[in-house]
Image (tube, rainbow, N blue to C red; front, side, top):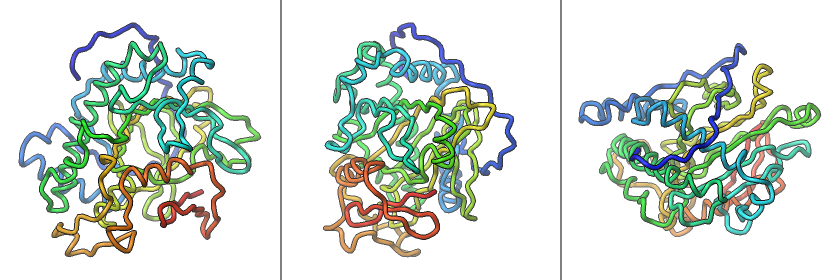
Length: 364
């Protein structure tokens, strides 16, 4: 990332790894040091295609952000929670229900989980256009670094990854890049997030689920790996398995928008967050994420010109392109209702709510 002035902030000491004997999912690792050559991109394209047709989750290593720079960003990610008084936070709340946007604070106990239990997760979300919203005083000094971090994720990770997605579908390599313009109106953003512990009674009521099984709204999610266990992936064999922590790695998955754009070829992976293991329950779970979405005005319709999709068949979630939503409409529909509406229970623990004419599903 470019050099910026760095105010002093308290150092976030990451918790030790868990010693719990979990069943971890076996995720592929994409080595981004290969992205700079045609041979490397060809190798990564094949690898991406394979992982997206199996787990749908994977790691990226050697991405260009040093260990020290990553640690600095986790120090910054803690400031909106530890460095801003509660009364000041209330001035920067996201208007989630009305705007369908998470920009600003999502407070604790905003989302319904299960058994009458509400979430204990607090977010502070900053749009890649950092001028879209005002920021608390303690955060204002850090905005140049947050913007540089957003730009790094967008230009150095997201765009190269989108080129691999396009190549894997035999599309012009900038097909998806051109839908994710840095200067366009869109909702790609940095999320700084902290989970807090719950009472033993609430853990029983919610069956230790901290965030229900779901798919992400946008195209690509970039999660910076952190040591507190809890993230689980719903595997192809029907089992939930934990995601292992790798130092200075990205945990990556695609979301709804990529499914729509790929005509169902690349499914968004179902994932959830569980209560941490006993040896990590005294620690807060601090997360740092970049959620990528297309420009707001992009219609989420299949790229039917793809030879791969033409060969394997195209699944449309809407009967025609006219009925398909824009990224803005899909994002607002899901964001404004998630955790706020009564879900209809289906078989096998699936719950759903209709958004833009199709079921938005959640999994226990």
